[in-house]
Length: 198
Ligand SMILES: [Fe+2]
Ligand SMILES: [Fe+2]
Image (cartoon, rainbow, N blue to C red; front, side):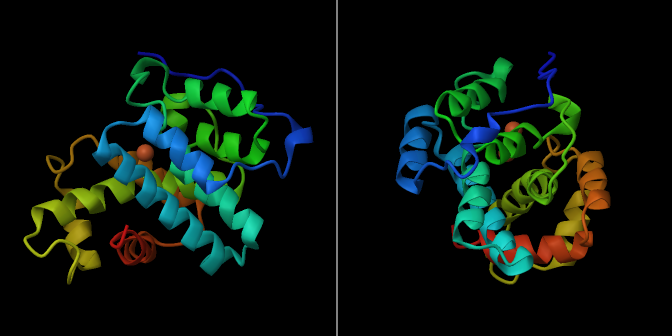
């Protein structure tokens, strides 16, 4: 199945700074994503993105909201339109005149799948966080203690087990890490710390 978006420009520059409220984004999520597990994945990616923006990028409130919204909505069309993921949510956000940086970030969460190269820091971070966050959560579900006491080395062990969370593409994680200024170990630690309470 080809989900290439075949474009490299998203949204309209005149909509810069045009964001939706978290209430609006959550309403969209409830409406488009009945699957609670998928909702949780999107909330976890959003929490990680927001925390990264604030703690690592010194982001102001508006910028942190951009990162959070991109995380919250990146898989919004996955459940209802799997063949057209993420074209549908991108077109919806363009219709709603949302800030192009948010839309581009969503478009770049899977370069191999959507054919869009992550450019901004926000683009690169959603790419690095998405799959790794999913693998860490899968690991928490197989541990009797959940997230409690989870260690980076345990996550790295699961990463090396090809059969564990087999849908998580290890090459994507390696590629994403090569694009950012952070080691795999640091990112794993950051994600464990920030997604466990979502
Ligand atoms: Fe996705
Ligand atoms: Fe995702």
